[in-house]
Image 1 (cartoon, rainbow, N blue to C red):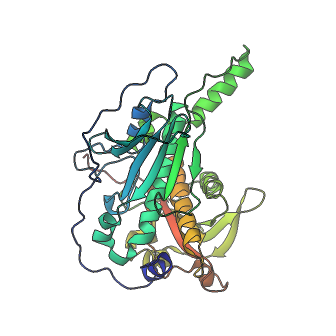
Image 2: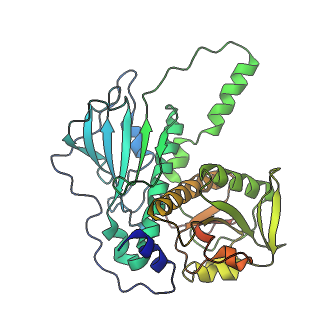
Length: 374
C-alpha cells in the first residue's frame, strides 16, 4: 500500500485487527557482534553517543531513551563511520539491546569524518499491534530517534549535528551526522567569558536526564504555567522547520486553544474545553480529556504526497521529542500522543476541511502519577 493511501486509512475510524507476531526486536545483522571501542584522543565517542540515544536498558529492549508507540521500536540504525571515530571506518549495523555493532562492509571513500547514523525501519514490529494505523507512527518514531541522537550529541558537546529529515527516501528514512570533537578556542579570562560558557553548559541536557527520561503514565493533570507552555510551543515551532503549525489545548481555569503570536506571547485561537474532543480523536484515550495541556502539531493536508507526509511526520516526532525533554527539565509530566483518527483540527476551527490534520501531540501535566520501578 502506498503511503498516501496508508495515511488516509490510518486517519479513518477503522479499528485495527487482532495483534500479530512482532518478530525480532533487532534486525538480524550478519557477522559477529563487536563492542564499541573507547575513543582515542580527538575521536568521537560513539559508544556514549549511542548509550544516550538508542541503547536499551533492559534485556527486553522496552526501556530506551527514545519513546516509541507501544514500545515496539521499529527503527533500525546503520552507522557509516569515517575517520576520527572510536570505530574503524566502515559500515556497521547497530544492536541496541546488546550495545554491539556488526561490520557490514567498507565505508565509501568520500565518507565524512565522524559518523552518520542512517535510520531505517522494520514496519512489522509496529504493524503487529497497530495494524493499518502503523505508517504514521513509524515515521513519528523515526523522528524521535533522530532527536534522541541530536540531544545525545549536545550532552557530549560534539559539533552540531547535521540532520536529513527531507522525506525524499524510504531507506534510510532519515539520517544524522556527527563530526569529530573540536577543541574549544581559548577564551579570554574574565567573568563575561566564564558566564557565557556556563550558560552554554546549562542549555545542554545532561547524561542523567537523557538516560532517565520516560513517557509519564496517565493521568497527567494540572495546567502548566503559561510561560512554560509558551517556551515549549516555541521549541516545537523551531524544531519543525516550517513543516507544521503548532497550538496548545489548555485546561483549567480558562480552557482554550492558543498559539504563539508573532511577539512570542500566547494568542487565543478558540475558547472552550478541547480535551473531550481530543480524547476521541486520539484513539479514544479518555485520560487526555483531563490533561493539563496538550501540545498539538498539525498540517499535512489530505492531498500531500509521500515526501511531504514523511517530512511532516519526521519533523513532528523530532519536535515533540525536544519539547518532551524540555518539559521534563521544567518539572512537568509529559507523554507523546501519536495516534490520531479523524482529527481535522482546521475543519473543527471553521477552516477548509482536509488541510490541517493533527499529526502529533504532547500531553502535559504538573502532577506526576506514581511510576512503577522497572
